[in-house]
Length: 235
Image (tube, rainbow, N blue to C red; front, side):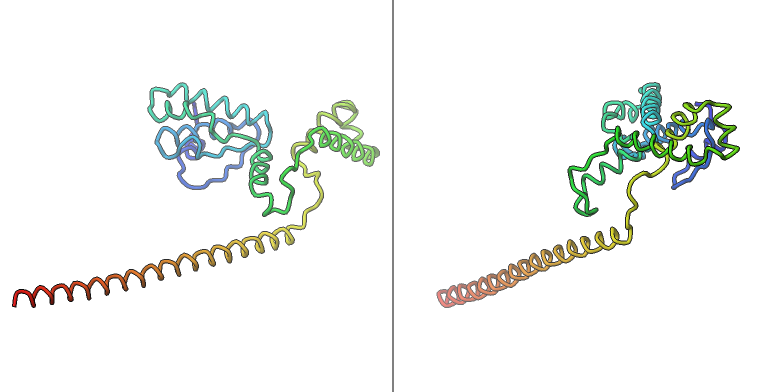
């Protein structure tokens, strides 16, 4: 990979970093190189690196690019091991990753465990919302020029629907304060439950300790008694 000095700085960085760059500037290349460096230097196992993108296409591209780079470095023992475990890598879309978390902790988020994402319905809603927006702004001179230069179908489906489906939230507004309070309440209950379990175990340990002391004391008295008996016999 041919990286400029700024891209190489990101790849070599060992702390959290935020990179702001435009389309086609090499973000995917930099992320793939950073992934490869962490593997080659033994800083992380392939299953310990979380790689997220916004679209499935980008996730698939990232997966393929990283795997190809590992194959090129397969003489490196760390890379060879990573290739064997690459099916365990976490390279996915942000939505997919969040869905996995939500399914694993659904009770903490107050959502049913059998929730699903209806992509057909999402696309239909994106089309409907985009069409309503275009029609509501049909008299806007910029919208008129935009449609005239590109055609209504492209403006609708290739531009607004694409933006709506990939970058906008079309779900119902969430009461994050209520969600936070629910999670804090759940965490408090779990903390109280754990504290009671620790108290129970602590009491058991103390009980064992007191019984052990009693056994030691009894053993000591028995030893003294036996020693006294031996002294009498010797006398």
